[in-house]
Amino acid sequence: MNNGSKEGFLRAETCKNVRKTTGLTVEQIISMSAEEVDDFISAKSGRKIEVKALLDSRLQGRGSVLLGRLIRREDIERRLAGI
Amino acid sequence: MGDQDATSGNPQRWKSVLAPRVENRIIQLFVDYQRKFKPLLAEVEAQQQCLPAEILNEIRAIFDHLSRCYDPVNKDDEEKVFSNLEKARNHLKRAILDCYKTSILYLHDEIERFMESINTIDMTVVNNGKFYERLLELRHHAKQAYYVAKMHESVELEHVDFDSFQSALARYHETADHIRENLNAIEWAKQRTVKKSFFRCCSR
Image (cartoon, rainbow over all chains, first blue to last red; front, side, top):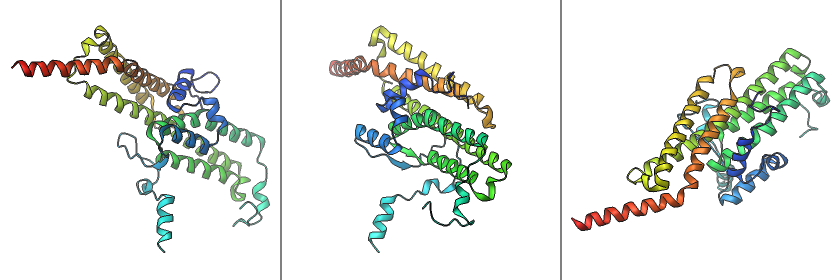
């Protein structure tokens, strides 16, 4: 999978931009778990990372038709609490 | 979960080792996931403050195809294993492509919002007019780079040129950086425009 760099890694300028946007180097991101990355980004912005359908018409639609009808864990817990 | 009985019979069969050349392709998939996809996804999350469901759906598909490689029903049929591996690889490619596109769109929208916000501001006073001139130039280059990437984007994922998407994203970052670096001067220009229009109103 050629992704533009000689060693098959991301380009230096892409890595630099990732660091600028996330506050983490690519090496740090690789060494962290997905949850740790999410926690870091959430702490930096003060907003919790949530799963959300972007539903942008400019992005080619693909995949499950249920993408726009995501059920969050919080919603399930709330409904369960009401039983 | 691992010791539970699998519906297809003996769970031990699920633990069987696949042929080395299959394992090598799986390892390559994981390397690409870690070194290419994960940093790009982190960038998307930091920009959007969310994990896009569309990308999550691709990850689910990758995991599904990978697990099917180990399914006793498929694992002895090398053709099926390779077919599943290829499908998993294609889903990873789509996920990477989605990261590039989502980031590009995010920056594009930010830049266009900024352009709208300076519609009535005299930008010729910022850095002797050089700021605006350079901004238009960078914005044009970013758009052109994206058109090139889109042109190279083929229905056949095998031929998708990730390099051109990487270039387009870098150009959009360059444009956004140019705006950020001049924010103080832009703010000053905004205030100056407000003052000018205020005095113009007063003198009527």
